[in-house]
Amino acid sequence: MASTDYLKTAKATLPSFHYRVGQTPILPKVTAPKNPANAFGFPAPGAQAPTAAHATAAHYFVNDTTWDAIIDHGDFDDIVLGSGFCALAYVEKALQLDPFRKILVLERGDFWLPEHFQNLPLPFKLVLGGPSETFPWSLSSQTWKSEVKYMHGSCPFFGGRSTFWSAWSPRAYREAQNGDPTFDLMRGFPASMVETASKEDFWTDAERLLHVVPANKLNDPIYKGLQTYIDDQLKDGKGRITGVQYVEPAHLAVGTVTSMSTLSFDKFSTPGPLLKLQEQQRVKSNQEHPTGSPLMIATNVVGQRFEVDWEDPKRHVNILHTSRGALCFPEGKTNVILATGAIPATAILMNSIGDAQEGRAGSRLSGHFLTHITARFPIPEPIHEKLVKNHLEIAASYVAGEDENKHQYHVQITAIHSPNPEKDAEDAGRLCPDYAAAASAEQLQGSEKYIVLVCATLGELSEKNTESWVKYNPKNPDVTTNVRLQINVNADDQNLWKVMDKAAYEAIEVMAGQQSSSLEYWHDGKGGQPGGWQKGVHPPTSDTHVPGVVHETSTLYMSDDLSKDKTASVGSDYCPIGCENVYVTGGALFPSSGSWNPTLTMCGFAQDLAKKLFEKKRNEKE
Image 1: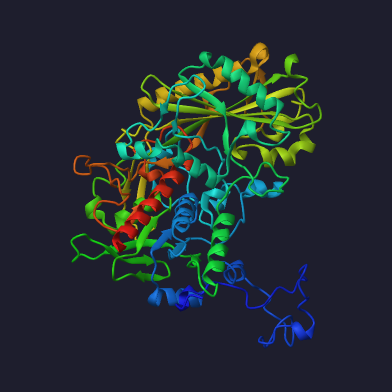
Image 2: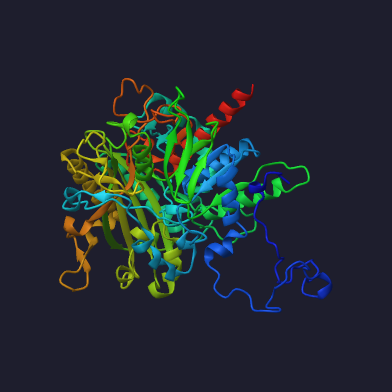
């Protein structure tokens, strides 16, 4: 057992009162625990209003006593802010390389969902959006009045956005295959990032972490005949889609890893894997001869800002201010890993080293704007035999392209055949690739003899637009929200939006094939009237252009030469200019957003950071 008191890991003081197979029941007096003075309602009733935080802290999270000890004399190799994808990617790789690495994870919110909401019963769909999403910034009026209106916010709970995300996980660097050339989709990225991402293990390691599997490889009867049909149609007809680069079955983070599981579609999220790591390290640290250090996770702790040692020429950070007190590391050897999301990380730097980051942090802001188009066509004769008549079928495919300015778009295609919409509702809700871009019950009703297509098309905001930014707001005293945010859709963005809408309609016609003349498009209802299908008539952009920018990037983008690039914030070592031992992860690092879903790439670079810091520590010891 580790001798330092705050490193004692949480474990139950009482064994479970349940009977365990292969173990002696604990309820008989001879085997009952003898230490508690009051247990199981004897001699007095127990606590009647335990909170979720209280119930989980005893097993997984830092309790108040341990937190006080951490504040008093905690000593860690890394303090990780956040509990989402980048936090998991960093922590998992760091402990894989060095099980004795001492890591403290700080999550601003509470424990809420144990896994992705789509893995839970259908009523949990109601938790998507609403109070589960916070916006730690002040939005400019120009943004609110624009077509995009706003940027999606943060999920302030353990696991962050991982409990809600779509699970689409394409690569941003695609080697030549199937007659296609190599596609480097990382426009404007520094050579160091491109070189890192050009290595195959960069992607396979991140795909292993997220359990990524192509849709056509899912061992599920729901992803079979229709998947094959849609993939074949796109492959054969991609030349008729404007700007197309390649098409492929969707790569989804839905794979299972247990050998006997009957599940073949299990959406990935970080709470379970993080708690599995916590348990793994607890076991290693509690051995007579420890084989690792505990992983400490504290919830309801907001990372606010840090302070550097101004007498240190390298400006090492030695204080991290949190909502529950200051964490001090006088030697300046503890690393602060910002895995909070792009905007919160930018706010932390602005509030900590604003002078050094002036004109850099927040000077660039990109992300993705969206179009959603829903269409249907009668099931063509050639695939009647491939579809199970009384069986739900889903397909997920990916189309990548660009406009004449090399700005990127992609189309996320979900195709569905539901012969029994009411009966299929539970499975369709759980197994569709993206619940936020899935066919509605209203659209499926009456479509029993149709294939319904939902095309979510994402385009990148121009990273060169100086009217999109994040700025420090000194009038707001709250350091966690004292930034202003603006998104401007310029002429380049409008051009890309037109191109990607055209490409989406062309992809729909390609998939419909011989039934393209029978295509119907969904039009939203007006004035309280229900929506409906219209044959051959495209819906207006007021129906299809979706408010809300997603996948924010570029606010702290990386450069290999900070002396020449005066608006870049972070060097090739992931460290921001103006301090030492602070490191940035996530989409904030990307000089441009591309159109690809960023999660897989973000995880790859977070794992790369873990490797670099492991090597740095090993070199310092030598």
